[in-house]
Image 1 (tube, rainbow, N blue to C red):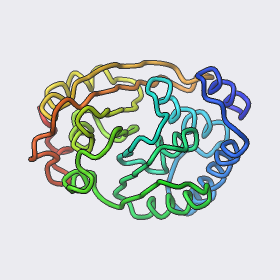
Image 2: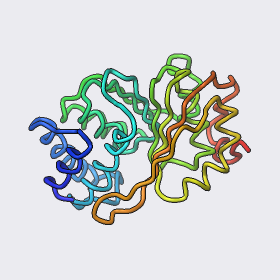
Image 3: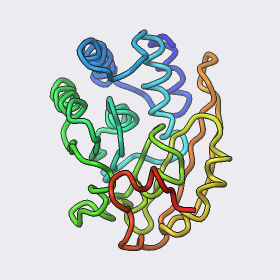
Length: 238
């Protein structure tokens, strides 16, 4: 996806980028490739692929959810900043928190935020299980997001505790979401969530199927969740 195609597809969805935002995406790409030479951030480094499979893919969440306004957004396991940093570029009023378990990635994100001159961003080196138990962060976010981090039964336990009541958990996935959601039905309900919508679409230029699930948090998550680090992955809620 070349830059003009990227801009055109965003414009079709009502998202128009100014010169500063376009420059931020360019700086993001160059910084990502530069740091990727010394640490493993992504297997995708071709410019057109990065714009399609990372930048456009991340922003696609905004085709199905309104990110305008100063929402508190937590991105769980964001890795190199996807999806929250591309969304932050497009919607500068967002207040972004990223939690990631790898210290090197947090170092990259701090450097990236400085390069992009972003404000209202915070990065935490922590396990999502521990982070979700911390009263400072638990049930504090309007939106909690994760992109290709874990199966839905696991992801729900990591993300829903961070959501405010009446907040939204957005899971960005590839194919097989329907099967994952079937396995995660009881976990989502137990943790206070309710599935609202599933959006299935193809990325432009044959870049693959994507699924976005939006889950509303209707009631508080029981205090015992999330369980200790590693436990959700080893023994998902059934």
